Image (tube, helix red, strand yellow):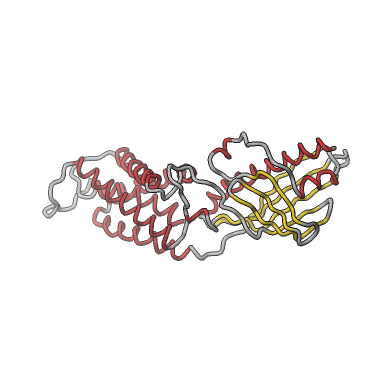
Length: 323
């Protein structure tokens, strides 16, 4: 490993060097997270890409910079993952995030932390004199990128789920407009804190009626915009509850629970089939302000599909029983 002159560097044993590298990187990461969460109010590329890169790079650089000991690349990878583990444990202990969100972000966090360690190893072995400059640039880029990206417009997405029901459209329609209490869910997803529907009520009929789809965390208030019985029921979303209750020892009200996942509108489309059955399609249009979208969109789509499926299966059971 190429070395820098160390006349002015006091001798430090490698255990001390290890924990200084892990501790300094962790504290800087916590401070950056608080800045991004609570001041810039951004959940994006700065947080989910550049921060884990910094965790791996920072730990590797602080430990390897100026070290006279030959260190294996695998050891650097372990140090980066150790820092990531301590960082995420701190988020849980200090009630910044809940367990489910940490687990959902773990795959991208681990991959990028390892990438940061790889980059740090290359820098301290090939360009050691550039290590401090790169470290400062990486730290400064996190709030800068967060500031730039937080106001970029989100993309509207549509999720469609369908089911075939052994009943005519008129019977299905009555169960779409409002439906009674659903049974307790058996799906593991809904036992993790993700909000799920429990019933639906409607005030009035026709365009302008107000539908309330009640979830475990509150109600979606849905003014009807299209009432084409028994073919199409379409509505906007005027109000919505928080999408989940965080798994934590504390009562967490994380910023991303408010206005970061937004349901804009929805519809139920009923199509009469030649066999006398009805094809029922549920659609939700939504956007989220959590990036990178390519990573978080599949999570959101999966959760919405599961919510749709719970509602559609309930409608199917009730419509077929009435039929």
